[in-house]
Amino acid sequence: MPRLADLKHALSSWAPGDAPCTSWLLPELRTLLRAEFAGAYRPSATDTGWSIDFMEGAGAAAAENVQIFRRYVAKLPASEEFVGLSNPHLVQEQQRNQVMLLPELARLRAMDEDGPAAGLFRALGIVGHDQIRLLVCDGPRQLAWVGATREEPFTAREVRLLRRLCRPLGERLRLERQLAHPGVMAAALDAALEALTAPAFIVGPHYKIEVANRAGLSLLARDHASVTTSIRQSALRGPRRAFSITHLGRAGEPAYLLAIRKESSGVAERVALAQKRWGLSVRQARVLELVATGATNKEIAGTLACAEATVENHLTELFRRSGARSRAGLVGRLIG
Image (tube, rainbow, N blue to C red):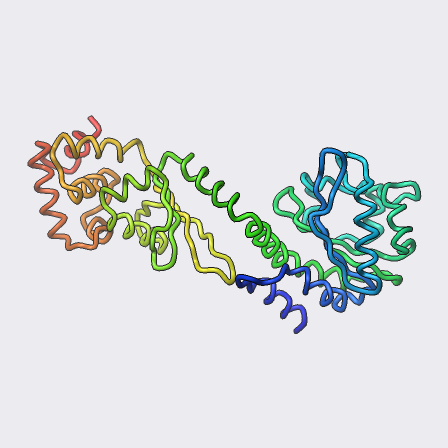
């Protein structure tokens, strides 16, 4: 379906300054689902009841319906569930990212004549209408309620269409939520990185290190070029990857990586002590560290972007300074 494919593409294409996706998605969704009204909103709990982070609609009397809904929500008492359906901050697993029709919603015991939603449906004039809805969630947290209403029953066709939009819509809403609070997100990222004891980096295009925690800054001070090379090899899934790599890039954004160094048995700390004790250069200390992880001369040469003969020269000097006669003896003296 060309229209569905276009919507999925539009959801995955983001540029700075773009309007929230619901502002242009809902009219298209209304047409796609052959609905009289399509809407989207996100509720949020307050100390006294509930509020609406955002709500938009498309269809006849959409603006009036949005105002009716907002007034209704403003009068809701404090409770764990929103309109008797679910807690938007802790959505039940069986409701997350699931398309539901009115009969399924009725089984959730929220559609009784005396239920919490009955008054709202009467005010909106949709009593007796069919409904289709999707709770777009990020884990247990609701990103948005997205749905539509019409007089005739929705069919399996509309269920399939809305279900196919779930993933790209969720990714877009998650991105928009993060962009709405860039200062908070940046502070959270800094705090998370500093909580890591291992060197950690945010790496931008062309493997340029943009952010590092304190352990990462210390490692960069010792051997910046080697760190960059190791991150690149880990991202390319080279042998003996020294960093765990998480891709942070989204559609429409530059590719960024989270690189966290894999620490093993305190090797880095022992190498730092050996460097002082044996008077090693930065490059000799890096070779010693790689030897301790079991890397071969060829792998060390690849990591350090040098010839194998250069690695052998470094090893000879390491043997001399440590008093070891073999690689095993060198590692033994390192950890002894």
